[in-house]
Length: 351
Image (cartoon, rainbow, N blue to C red; front, top):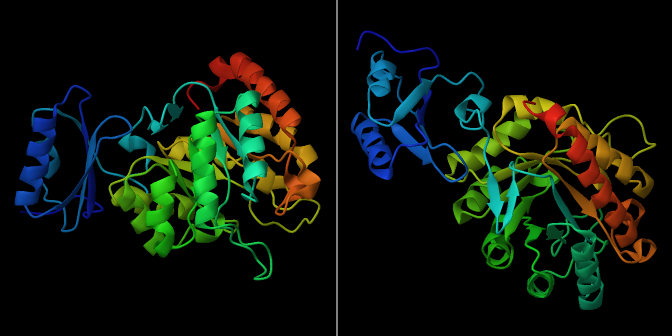
């Protein structure tokens, strides 16, 4: 060919919502015949086909545009090709059981920072259900700054989370710390969390993507928005588009709060990416009295949900008690989130 389009290694083919599987498979087959690396995503919204590798042939965009089922050919601007908003302008919907992120009301995830024992978890899970939250969180494996701090119950904690899910009907999200844990955590959990410290653990991201499970990707506490979205790109490039981003605060110079909760990131990420984004006001502030107001601020900024730490007796929590709220506070917060959502829905449309 005479030349190649700009940024010759990447292109997105957005399929029509009416395109059938045969048409998508035909496009993938034709592109692979021409020597391109191809990845098709269809799980969370409008089907898209991404290609990279060799330089894009000059005639390829026009040729693709004429194929049955193709709606538009997009040359991605940012380095995060698959995560970019122009790939799916209508946004991606992530499903965890009956819970949906990116469609409908904000999702509230709540539970203890760490699974401590059976009584603590089951009491908390039932309180979370009664408060009106949609999902249960709880750490079975805990990454701690000090090697002498409580590290979690491991697989016993996962078994307890599965028991709590059975008792309450709440889907479970829990953190996976390294590649060796992926299989066992995926066996028990409905959604896998990549924590702040592991946001750029690319081997872990690849392994988690391969499970096909929905993923909650927390922003690193020293990561830029671009770095965060590039980490999401690893998951998408691994064939998994069921990714929810989580803003959880970045490290600043002020020690009055544990981190600085960067709510700028919420509307910004909604403009830059099609992936849903939620907020963690517990880690973002480190102070339980700040959790309710910052939760409401997050929803007002356009967050698709919240993840909050709850314990029946926060002062006795083994991990992060200072930032943990009571079930009563959670119930009041869920009520206020619903009320705020009702009055801001029209305002937030189009963010």
